[in-house]
Image (tube, rainbow, N blue to C red; front, side):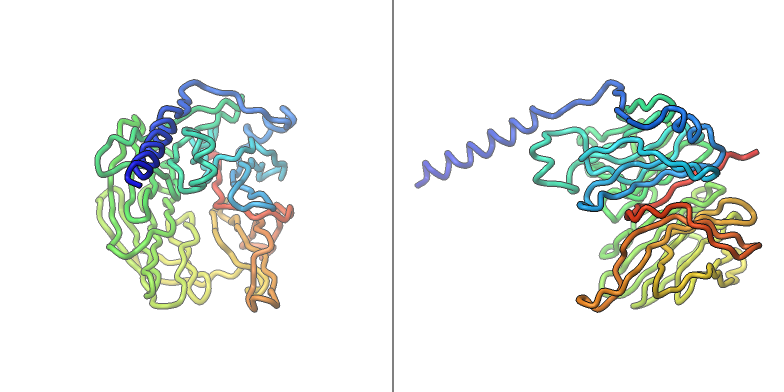
Length: 345
């Protein structure tokens, strides 16, 4: 019996070593295959106002395609589609590149087993020629701070510094030189980071978190003074960070959507002419002085589970002057966090 057990353990060890030795090292630039019209691609890339998001496979929400959307013409195209658990696409380097999270290094067979718990890396896509490059990967030899995931990506539009969460407890900064990540904030033990959002002036980082079995909170961290400048918390009911206004005021979902002035703590209610029983606003992005972009879940009451379920996620534009809501997408797919590039005049 001992011989059988030892033989089994030896076999497991051999498989583990073989898996480690079969790591796929992506070190060169690769060209992505795309069936999209090159003229459409050029038009969207050169647009002054564009968006990028992850559109999920209707049959399997584990996988999604990275989509570019021209906010002026409403034309869109799929950059690429694969099965490496991609997430969090954001614009980078003045809108010419897209940075995203993916699990493309390792044994493909092992990836099928561990799925979205796999070791992740950062990749960049050059939107002009669709070249894809490994942007950053932890060597897994960095001691206690081994970066295996990059959640809730945010990018400083001026310095290209990246902010993210790794394991739901810490917030990190990846400097422009990519010489190593820097831990800038840790959440209290027992809490979990739910979302991050960088203000338009690149100074404030909103950190949404959940206290298991207790409530929800939002911390506002000043990246210039390196200290917490505001914290909001509510017990029980969901308290959600939705985005930033052009005045660097956070949009918060309490009983309703509000705009909070961090200096005076004054609160202003925001309405978008949406039926709360049919729609759920997930994200708000400032577009210009008169309008914002919304990422909205369309809801349907399920008679079996007895509550509203999301049937699709769509992108809309709301004009504060005309009080008009225009839908920019209507494709029926579920979508992940929206990221927008607005070229300044």
